[in-house]
Image (cartoon, rainbow, N blue to C red; front, top):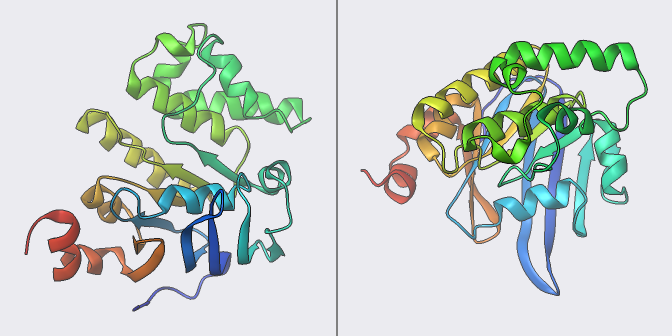
Length: 244
């Protein structure tokens, strides 16, 4: 496994992480790190263990190994504690509250906060980032298009003021033009101090927009490097991009 990256501070450090469901192992000694200010892509085929890794980090499922987030041990924490610390996930499939308005969905992202002025300022900010949501703020979230729902899910996560934003399959079922807009948003918020861990089925999209990448196969990290180098790696191109 080859790694070359900047010497910026580590935000997330994972060593020998294992997890699974009902006694069935999925992750096997996964090791990776995310540094502040990066967009990190986690790629791999369906069933490789990418979503399981995110669920373990979010503390939705039990895991074994070492997980340091902002210098603290994440493993014994609950999902609420991890969320409060600034580790926030946008799940695959959005998982919005369909029968609630767009704005109420966004405010759910701030449910742990008590700073009303800050919440109001952040609501304005996400409306500036996603003008479409401002136009639809009273509409039921379940009646929006897939792209609009993905915008809402990402904006809801931003309302929690994450230090690390983890996004699972952002492009799933969306038109390329919408995906391009969402990638621009990730670059913008990363420039404003939000670090991003992106799990993405569109391998070229993920690596084109990321600083660093990890390749997962059969529950383990099997390759890593600068994203630009992984795109040109013959093994990655053959396995995931379908070219030599």
